[in-house]
Amino acid sequence: MSSGVQREEAWRADDYLPYLLARAAHDVAGGFHAGLKRHDLSAFSWRVLATLSDGRGCTVGELCERCLAKQPTVSKLIDRLERERWVRRRRDREDGRRVLVEITEAGRRKIAPVLAEAREYERAILGAGGASELERLRAQLRALIVRYRGIGPGSPVERPVIGGSTRGPRAAGARSR
Image (cartoon, rainbow, N blue to C red; front, side):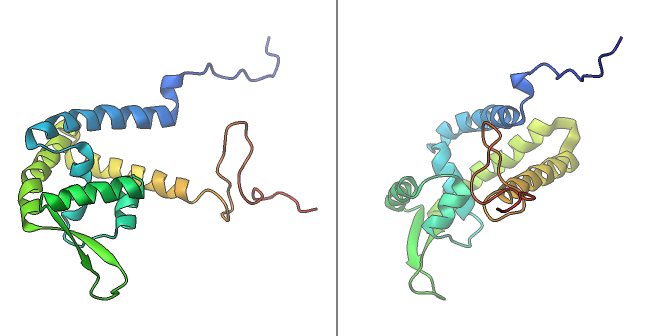
């Protein structure tokens, strides 16, 4: 006999999306980062040089955003990478107030074999799924990032926080007084 009350499924921490994302990042990146030692690179140096390898240059603020790090940490690393002659700072030609960080030719030589290993590492992780699975996964992760960044103050949907409350402006649909 059914009471009509739906039972909540038992909580499984290892099915929680943030946990799965963190676990995947930890395991997948950890395997690759272990191999960086033979190139005499830290994971953070790798991220910065890989980011700059497209040749477009970035401000320190852009590097912070793209490398998921705070400004003092990025600035200290840029100082060190400059001493190694792997990056340089220069004034932006279009806006002289901005300073761009660029990879040097020595930096390109340093990061080129690591980029090749990174591509091979991705292929090895995905195995039989290949390029189409990689592109599908990238698209899903990018969509998740965009969706999450679109939640918050000023958006129609508020970012959830523990306890079910929200931060910032009123949640969509809330009545004003």
